[in-house]
Amino acid sequence: MADVEAESLARSLTERSPAGIAEQIRELIAAGVLTAGMRLPTVRDVATEIGVSVGTVAQLALLREGGLVETRRRGGTRIIEGADPLGGEFAGWSGVDLLYCSPDPHLLPPLDEALAKALKQPGINAWGREHMLPELQKELQKRLTDQPREFVTVSSGTEALWLATRAAAESGDTIAVEEPTSPGYLSVLQSMGLRAVGVPVDEQGPVPERLSEALEAGAVAFVHSPGGAFSDRHTLTPERGLALEAALEAAPEVLIIEDDPLGPLGPGAAPSLDALFPERTVRVLGFERAFGMDLRTSALAGPRELVQRCVRHRSGGVASNSRILQHALVQLLRDPVVSHRLTSARGHYATRRRLALEAFEAAGLTARAGTHSWAVWVEVADDRAGGPGAQRPGGGGRRRAASHVTEQPTGLLRFSVAQLPEDDAVLAELAQLVHRAAVGELGEATFV
Figure 1: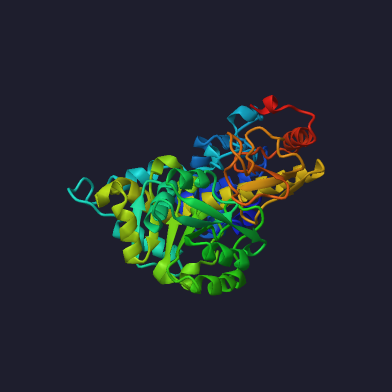
Figure 2: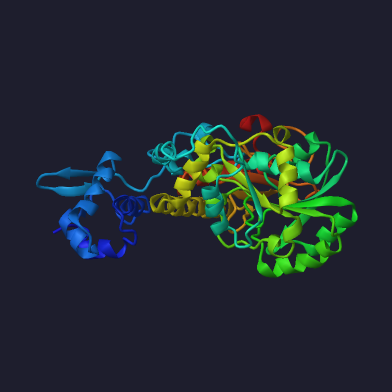
């Protein structure tokens, strides 16, 4: 008898394609549902339970190639790797990004199959430019409930946000910015000669009264992240979206820029102000945190005139993205196996956020994060305190001035959770280190 019964395993397999079956078993291993030493049922038994051919299940060989299972003639197929996505013992903080909210490379889907399929698509190397392939536009329209009228691809979500900002404002203008904002965005505004005015948030989203104040101060655009990608407390609620309507209706010339840096890894149903103001909302769709920087394809979506304005600021309007990379993104968005991988990755990022919050709180620190945020914010009484790679608001200097415009009542340290180890003991050590720094027991040089 196998340690894992075929009937029990079949109940967990919703995807019936060959690669999908293998991928779902990989996810069960990654999640710790199936653990090292367990023996899997035979291929024939699994095929019988889920009603597919033996050949369909035979791609469990993919698990052997990935080093997750081993098959012995008399011992059957056993799991040989546990649930650690980092692939082993924690090697220290030097290789962990605590500042920029970059993804965990171990959780990125492989690109080889998507790129191989992309290379076989018709039209590759044709002499011409499409700002977005029709196939990619169709995939993005499925994911945008309000379906903007125009799409364009750019090389990254960061470039898309820059282009949208440049299209909305000229040097000397004021931009209303939800805070905390995306890492580094305030520096971008400064480099463009723009002034930022902060719009604080509560648990439901930007505070309407504070948005009204920012618009009355002359802001020409409002930049926010409905999914709360780096927020200390919120994901925009439908009720708050409606509450913001009055403030924005009173300023009909103000453009709305919605930043979605997590893409498929973010909340799938975050409200959009595009439903209320389709004629002046541009949406930034980032894919690098889901698929990696080297895919070099993200998107802008919105009303034609506004998107075309963005295009004109990109190499004079003549730039375009590789069709190969666009087709690869299409393949990734369509692939059910990749979808399962993203679901697994989303779960790991949520676990790391939860474990970090628990560790900081156990150390006697006040910590908070939005429901889907990739950042945990820790309150410290002394704003001079720091942590390895931490980020605080206000002032100047390497570890200051990145996410807040408004002066905060207490010091705040931002920690990226995406690459944190899923290890209670290691996180407890980090939290204790931050606590010691917060009360002045450690010098600044400790964290350089």
